[in-house]
Length: 415
Ligand SMILES: Cc1ncc(COP(=O)(O)O)c(C=O)c1O
Image 1 (tube, rainbow, N blue to C red):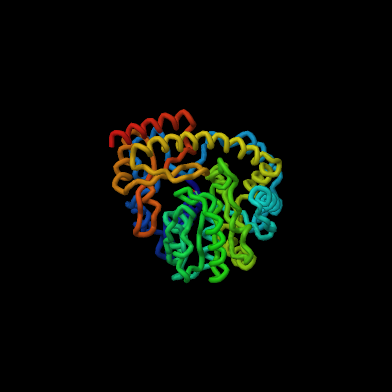
Image 2 (cartoon, rainbow, N blue to C red):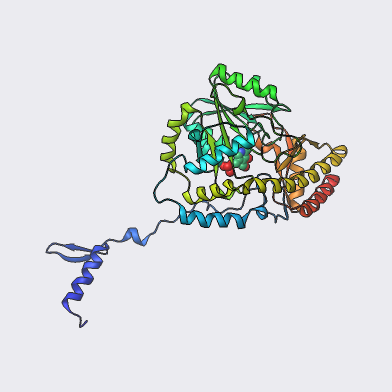
């Protein structure tokens, strides 16, 4: 080749170091057996980017519940605080409970907005409500333990319970919230959404709240209070949270910014009962240590200057208008069809009852017209699923909502 001996030995050295050649003592150098490299591993199972089940049709109007309007996100203010946070966050892992300044601001916020009087030392910043559920269940249950949940209820909470090997005990919900007498005595944990039951939208009555707290005290049960949707209440003031009424330290108060700002932020928090605090901190270190300090600092800046409060006032007015459009529509339709709206004055969706057969037919017919809705029956865990439709209004503005409801009216007339 006309190259020097040094070049050749260097090339051999590289090839041997990368595993392409095997050097044998006195046996020269041979090409390695590269069968493993010739046959790369290929995955023949399903890929992860499948379209969401049930909606293969084009969606013109998305009335599925659960997401706030991304067009309302306070992008300018958030960017301003994010820029500041990038410059000012501290290097290092930080506190697994979250940045102290943010926890102080959050403690002030829940005291002001919900009357929840908790020390910042009990408050942990989490990656959404979901992580708070995970930590609480991991800290409080062993495989085989019973966890009572509202039925219908939040499926993602049930998934956490099952993943830990605990048993889900579905408990019926009526117009006063969870039926406390039906909670099994062996339940170690009860999960509830008292401000706005998910998905029916009923508010837990004061007498039920007191009965649930009594049960927790008598049976040493942990109550997980998911204060879901308390920020979007349109008519009256929300009732006092269980946490505030509790006198025995048995309530874990969970809140999230997923409905108020965006689920994409993955920011929430939990007020942990003192006896669980050290276990939860240990678990937190194992899971992910803490959320991004830049995101935490951004949120702190946004909350501290009162912008979040102003934003809530503005968005509450917008959602209230959409809520009225849906409830007025349903009131008229209910007189003509078997559709029975659940009385609700909060949140980003309205639930209605129907018979189970009608639910499937209507979901299908609406999907054919480009309107995506969710059926109530899909949220039941127990054997007594009843039918219904959930009309979400987080993702459509008032004009789009009006158009979508006209299609719903038309479909209801034809089916
Ligand atoms: C009942 C309920 N709780 C909490 C959440 C918020 O969960 P996360 O904070 O994990 O986004 C949701 C979101 O859909 C919900 O439906």
